[in-house]
Length: 223
Ligand SMILES: [Zn+2]
Image 1 (cartoon, rainbow, N blue to C red):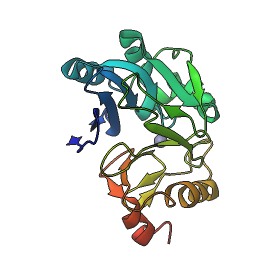
Image 2: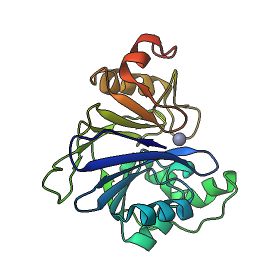
Image 3: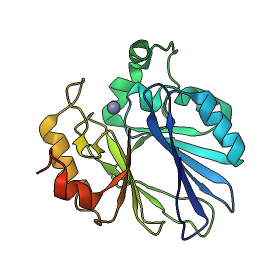
């Protein structure tokens, strides 16, 4: 788990969830306790325990894409907390296939809850906390899946990018699964991610964090 230095009442905690260790991130206001969760993963019991420990009120569940290890138990988290579920429309077909995807992850799930809205390129998220306005921006970065998105915030001393399975430390997302596109993922990374401030911390969908400077200089898939 990592805790970030903060400029405002916005807090961030990131930790691995589920049998594929998807990195989940929780952004919350220490003033109003409003929270957004990025990629709750496929272990709702762990997420609900974390929500309880932090004493937060989750408004929305945002997803970088609709692979089961990132979104598999969002229906359960939504039903328990009242949080809304958001995903880019390009991944609706994967969301509809969650029961089948679950079998590959050794988990039985029912039909997922209907999405509350589609994520849009450039969509901005905010809290009611007046210190935290428009703190999170959606970047549509297709390639790993058609609806893959990253989320970006400058509300910390170091800007933070939640990269899902698009960019990893010294690697990039696989493109051999349904809807994957190897040319598109390179284009998305080069045009949308490597153009962010170089000091931006990259919280990848799995594994260790990195930053834009390091990946721009030495990621073997991008050189
Ligand atoms: Zn994935």
